[in-house]
Amino acid sequence: MTDASGAVFVDLDRTLIGSASGPILQAAMVAEGVLPSGRSIPGERYLYGFYNSFGETAPFMGLARAAARLMKGRSPEAVRRAGAASVEALIDLVQPWALEVLGAHRAEGRLLVLATTSPFDLISPLAEALDFDDVIATRYQAIDGVYTGRLDGRFTWGLGKRDAAREWAAAHSIDMADCHVYSDSFFDVPVLSAVGHPHPLNADPRLAAVALAKRWPLEHWDRPPGVPSVVGLEPYHLLRPFLRPEAFPYARFTVAGVEHVPAEGPVILVSNHRSYFDVAALGMVAAKIGRPTRFMGKQELFDAPVVGQLARALGGIPVDRDSAPGDSMRKATAALRASEAVFVLPQGTIPRGEAFFDAVLHGKTGAARLAAETGATVIPIAVWGTEKVWPRSAKVPNVTAIQHPPRVTVTVGPPVAMGGTDMVADTAVLMGTIADMLPAEAREVHVPTEEELAATRPSA
Image 1 (tube, one colour):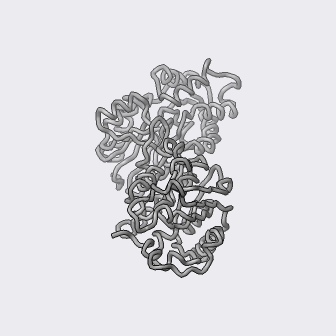
Image 2: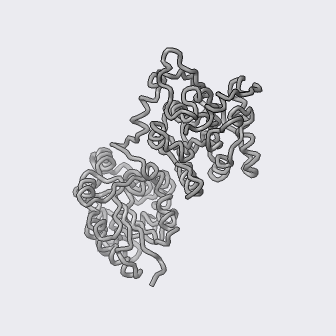
Image 3: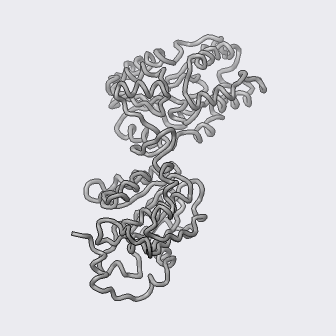
């Protein structure tokens, strides 16, 4: 008997990793002397290119099955060494959100099983490195320390993978109804249908059609859950051409310093908060850096008309401090660990009343905590003038100011070094840096009029 609450069977190629593992595994076997150098399948490059784009085909898998004969007389130990040598390169191909999803399954008490057609000896080192509990894979028969050219048991593909999963579950006293399967392949429909929780992931065209008919949700691990994609394009990619100053004729934008944002790796983009229109201003930065971004903001920002939808399209992470205060931090941490860029507004909400005119910016410690936990680069952003386009007191932005549009400045600064031990001190340094980047008028002592104070308060 087992205490597990179920199992999660995960396919390898185009599922756990974003492409075929074959080229990396083959190169490792050549390096170990398992395969002769210079030997390859005619048109191999195009075969793998087709596989990466459209998934498995029966002829391609026929070649995989025939590989057992090609391994006759070769050493299983050498194959295992090749598998170990390929681990680092394969881990680099693991989809950004895969480990986050699998970690959540483990936290709920499920066992993780790598279920693949790939040879067991070749792929087991990867499973061990990723902390899988077990492996279901094709095994090659070995006698006296060499492969015989025959399979040891079934070819773990199609019905064979389904039967192997059933046998594994029975051996561990786990009900298949409590199991999950993640796969990209139409040929895994048997095992997907055999469990209580099928997950077509990065589905090939035929599996996508089956999923539609069976009402299985289509999932992806190359972006956060809930962010849609069409032929690999997120809403960010579709919106990017429109996130230009010309799209907002009622505001005059000046955006500077975007070159400070790293082109890759985890980045926390930290901004002050003056208006709901900040989302549009920061959207300009997102468009210029050319990489999908996530947006962390208070729930009310996501409830605002137009910009709320924009924030969600940018992979928004609503912060609801009343019902689930830790959920937003967990999602932001996961995004950064997936080497994504995340916008954070430490002030949380737009300051009201006299606080709106305070030259000293105050913020919560979320950005500092994220930086300490993930090691992400922290980039400060100073936004000014958005309140003239959309004051807090208005329900919608003033789109009529086309003749004399207010000026909005967005200044991106160089990375801020964070100590990583004192979150309050780090936050003070960060907010001070942003304040110093604002125009000189932001630091002038200003006694607001009643009309100005009223503009900082929400409309009734």
